Image 1: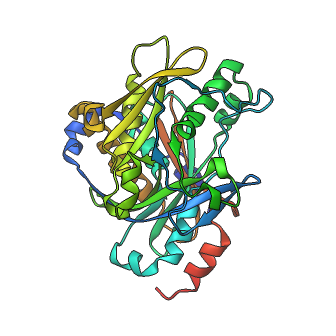
Image 2: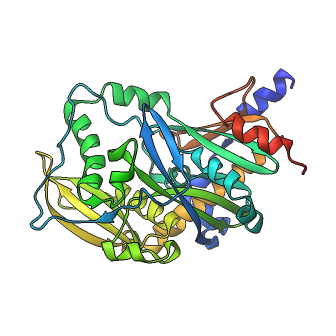
Length: 355
């Protein structure tokens, strides 16, 4: 591709998706999110900084609150370790896709991605941090994969001891108040087992196949139900001395819950010594008002519109960078290969198929 064309693509910037007034003028506030419909699940375990995929429900956890509530969230904390980096599990969804081709054929999609990516698109209006993601179109489907930004790496590397403890406490809390009846069967990553749901949703003209981490079901009794009927909850904390969580957290929690079909958030107040003595339950629909909900959905639709206009050629890598300060999203074709974007075990199978 000529240099001039590359430069043109690099300069494509979208502004309107984070402007609520513009969204209303474009009537984007009437866009609805249909779904999510549960299609399946998979479990994964951390093993030596790698993720192990398992096509089963072995990582399913259930809520088990202590009575009385008095939880030390720093149990197991290592002050010599920086917390916040995560092993990317975005591409594990592709393993599920290859194993469930019959199901995929019943639910056509334009995008394949992780709920975390969709959440970032939904809350761009309120975002305070930059993010980057890559996209590649394979047999008509745009696969999106999020890369840890340089800003985030630097932020984690230089975060204070207090922030490091807070990051650890948020994840550890989710493990301390849940149980997994199958833990004795896990061969690796016992404390880092995670169950993911696979969903199909539609927003505007976009159809998405997406996966999201399901923290746990609301009680042990839910384990006896079929997966499609289980009631899942989201576990989140906010830090004292504040009396409640922030607007940013409300929008983030609502987005993640909405994408996974979750109705309840279990909210914990984490004191300054990282103990939790107060936990309550919130209805997801009450986290933010209808205006904020429409803004999140309209933002997601506008970003997906933009990505579709950029990712036009098959088997080419595209990068997208969001600048939180300027609220701008830039998309461009990447020159050269990127082996980490899409695993070869997926592309080899897909490219060998007849369209």
